Length: 176
Image 1 (cartoon, helix red, strand yellow):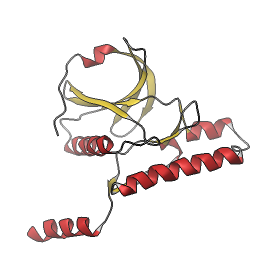
Image 2: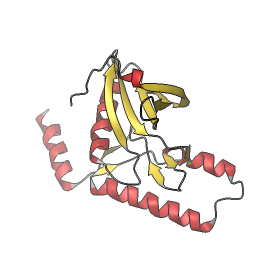
Image 3: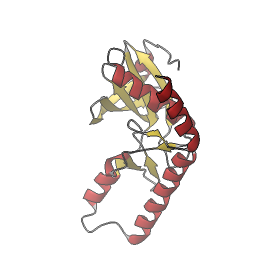
């Protein structure tokens, strides 16, 4: 999979802060300088040097390009700069954990039902496309200002085990 190496593409974004950090890198809140659109940019550390990071990044990128659905965070673009890989996503203001911290008595039942329904739609879409997320937790459930739930962070996802996938796996395994 070819990712464009665009040296100055980050110049079109204003970095507003760090949203989160993980084992593979950092997520930045940015604003597009021309359109003023807010985005989240996932910057992978040691992308080119570390084979595991590179493989994880490329797998996530490939899957996200196929997973277009309202309840899955939208991948806008991907690029490489100075040996590091970047994924640009739609920006969603908060995650489920932050929302729950704001509501010490819990969310109203109607909202809970709505979030569960939206999560089920996202999971169903993933499974329909033979993808298992494998890391569903409050931090990976984004909640937009208009209460749209978005599943994010497909870094540890895997292909679902189907009879076709089993055949491919066994074929690869037996061939050495």
